[in-house]
Amino acid sequence: MTDTLSTAATPELDENALLAAYRTMRTIRAFEERLHEEFATGEIPGFVHLYAGEEASATGVCSHLDERDSIASTHRGHGHCIAKGVDVLAMMAEIYGRSTGSCHGKGGSMHIADLAKGMLGANGIVGGGPPLICGAALAAKQQRSGGVGVAFFGDGASNQGTTLEALNLASVWELPAIFVAENNGYAEATASTWSVAADNIADRAAGFGMPGVIVDGFDFFAVYEAAGEAISRAREGGGPTLLEIKFTRYFGHFEGDQQSYRASEVAEARAKLDCLKRFRARVAETGQLEPARLNAVDAEVSALIDTAVREAKAAPKPTAADLETDVYVSY
Image 1 (tube, rainbow, N blue to C red):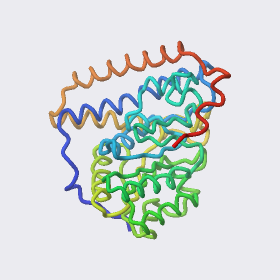
Image 2: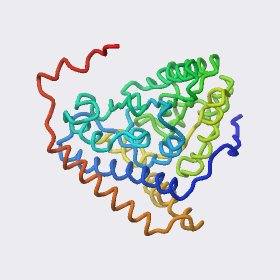
Image 3: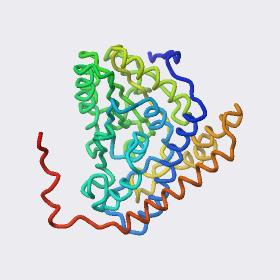
């Protein structure tokens, strides 16, 4: 049985916090939609997996995080990076394989990282992030920093042994860890309704002695409240939580995926469930933010993405001399 956590510990969102959340979600959406266009030109090397449609998850969770905290991501990691504060210009340069990128053009889309921001990296290994977060959470616990570790993973990774072992370890050691299962319905082209035995990934939490919470991933406020309670609980020594955030991705598993395995669900989600539309409707209804202020954010974000693409295309590529750098770390 999944739990419903109290939201009493979740701080209220003031006007500035609401604007910041909207800006983050809009930045993720604009970044991904522009990449969708740019990838078609053939100028971007490697694989690209887009996060569009899932913005409320990364934003709702990371709104509670600060410099004490670490996150581990997936191959679909751009949204997590942006929500954790990684520089958008450096991200775009990285995806274009340029030396000005966040990993000097050596990681590309699937391996963006910024340790200074607590972003331990996107990960091409399905289920690779949860064990890393156990390490980060253990360090926070031992150092008594009040920090937490957050692992984002997909419904496909929910079946990986690494994820299940990490869930168990986090409970055994009572780690300040949050496991965020982003269930967009498909592991590549395989439906989770076919490949995941339980109806809900969050139901598995009971087997590891931790709360399991199902969240509407199209609703920023629902994610914000659930994540706030889980993170507050972890900071106070209450141990780990498994959040299952349900939504759908707008684009294919990777750029080039024709999505022949699904039909009308994307169009319906964009029209009726979109997290940005729901956010705008909510703050307009409550009178917290005027549409003009949100429109101004849209324009600022659009200009930022234009600058990111322009600078990325003009930046130099790594040279042969860079081949053996960034291989070892000196402690």
